[in-house]
Length: 397
Image 1 (tube, rainbow, N blue to C red):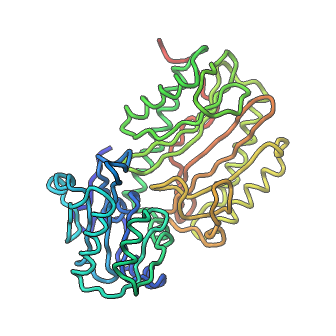
Image 2 (tube, rainbow, N blue to C red):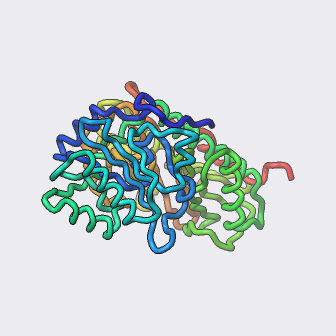
Image 3 (cartoon, rainbow, N blue to C red):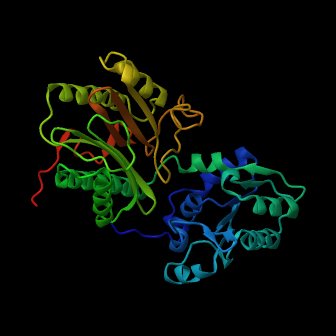
């Protein structure tokens, strides 16, 4: 699972012509990107490991800046932490101007503003990420350029990231495959008496051993719908619902698989078959040119015919560097955002997570979640293994 950081513009997952067009449409002259995922994306893969888990330090926080001037790559700058000098020495960043000068939000912002002034900008329309810019930094930018308009560039970045490169698809594929493999190993090692906390810890180790960064596991046992870690233990004949996210170099795998300690009876087989029928209905509509709305509506029409429709739900969302990103195909279901891409045609390289969830009142939490990439003629599924009833307790002691 090797990963090559971009050290030239030719290695990047996006094109500057596309970015420039998006910026022109949004009326943005200069980008000041501060979210870690978008800085990582624009830099071509670099994320400073010292702040990968937490931003806080001292009285402030880590605040990287990627500064891009529309139509002028040579002015691009990156403001990083002082210690990122070593990263740059080992794997030089492609940006022409690297400024490892900061320890907090205000000194990082002052360095970024100095770069804007040095590049000769006067009153630009500045694209910021409102949800990822602390108030002290926002105030400094507004004060430094009082005649400028601050525009939220979040939508620009979401659109730019929506179509994945082959390199990105490979990382998403490997992440999903690794999680699938880790789930099967965990279920096989799970026995009666193992607690939810113990099972989740085993999955964490299995994912980490496969080169992934473990993000979370939502786990249910038996008839319970509670997916939080806890002391509940698995008993003979009970089912397992294992929903986990992990990432490979930032790219997220997120799937859900079912297990059982014993053999599934006819009812359990039928329940999972109902889930599978809805998933397959969604898959059948996926191809470039089809709207996401058509995918959703067809899956929901099949769901409406299922005997357990009243306790079953289907939804889908985009996947990539974050777990809900473009294309945005449903509105407020359940994460609060507008499904602005539902009526737009799907394009090759877009990646979707599709999930059908049944909260059965007696048998428990039954779910499948799959990650698929849109292709010209259909789709490619990542992490394909283990989509039936996985048998727990089968591994040798």
